[in-house]
Amino acid sequence: MINLGVANERLRLSTQLLVGVAVALLTGCVRYTGIEHADRELTVPATVEDTHYDAWPDSAWWQSYQDPVLNDLIEHALRDNPSIQVAEARLRAARAAGQFVDSKLKPRIEAGFDSKWQRFTEHGMAPGFVGGHHDTDNRLALDFNYELDLFGRNRALSAGTAAQIEAQQAATHTARVAITSAVARAYFALAKFCADEEVIGATLAQRARILELVKARVALGVDSNVELRQAEGAIPRIQSEREKVVERIALLRDALSKLAVVPFAATTGIHPQLGKLAPPQLPAVIPSDFISRRADVMAARWRVESTLKGIEAVKAEFYPSVNLAAFAGFSALGLGALLESGSQIYGIAPAIRLPIFDADRLRAKLKFVNAQTDVAIAEYNDTLISAMGDVVHAVISIRALEQRATAQRAAQAAAESAYDLALQRFKAGLTGYLTVLATEGEVLTERRAATSLKARAYELDVALKRALGGGYAADAVIARR
Image 1 (cartoon, rainbow, N blue to C red):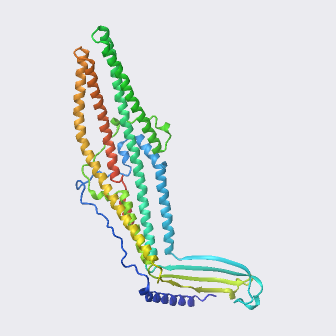
Image 2 (cartoon, one colour):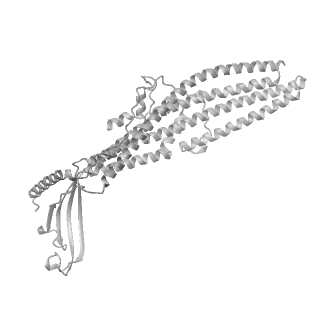
Image 3 (cartoon, rainbow, N blue to C red):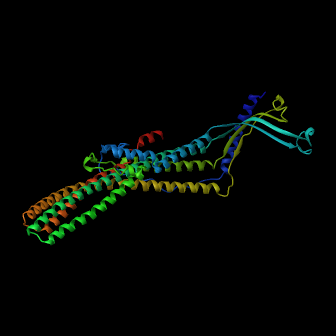
């Protein structure tokens, strides 16, 4: 039988000896003094615009537009878009890597059977009765191995991979926000060009009516063939403009089909109406500390955390590593005696390793991970600055749009009034067709400008929601830290 008391006592004595040796050798090991990372993380300024915010985007922010077609397109995109599938696959890979690294913190027990057939030498350590004979050397045992993480190397590696998992989880949300906002932007751009097509269609109908009026005036001798040719030529020009808009509509429908991963035929019937969509709810004020909750900012911050843990792990390699190994089982020549009591084996095999001279391998490795940390910090700072710029730009553009919309409404009202007067005077024979054509062109320009500004409002609303993280639930991530 295995004497467990003796084995435990020997294990305790061996562990004490190893720890004593480790302490004695620490003064002679390779040192990492003088190696540090250089960069420092930026902090978010006190505010970007104001100090209160009451419209943080929901995780399903696109539903606020109350458009079932848009909702359906985004649901398809979130389920089937390859960019999101790539991000989710990377997240699964990061989690698997984390499980692998975490396993180093736990003991490992293996059961094994080894059998080796050989001819035993007559001049070696084999028993004399087997010298010159052929037989099998068999071993059936349990092997135990455990690394004492005295200096925290494995714990640092585990924390580093946990940070990588959080970073990839945030990156997955960044991909989702990028796809959903791209779908929404393309959808509202399509709505804008559909509205343009309607404006141009109405203009064509109006020009057709004017052409009939000109023909009647020519028949009465009020106008000449010059006005008739002008009226006839105005129609092909606006038809050419309409074809450009139709082409743009087809391209946007194709873009939507690719983003949402649906057949192009499924988008050919999509005809969004800007007037039927719920108006965007623009926030009044935005505190800048919310910017740090953006998924890409959080991902960059977690990457910094991972590299910092990597530094801790490499620093721990400068200290001794202590491994405990033990085994218990049976060993015998030939299978017949393998399970007999006399074939029992057991033992412990503690080991300690201390770097004394390694030709600066560890110092170079530490310099490398410190440089990686500098890169991660610089990327975090760049991401933070970019995020702040995205929010500021969106807010500035939204506020400028309000002024532009006010001015455009006044300009359109004046153009519509001038066109109505010119058309009345033309019908009464008080003005020529060129005046009608000129005022009509101004009306067409202002009507299309109105649709452009309305579509721009939705575009900026999407941009602001994306700039604020698209509803990323960063609180849950921080709580898991």
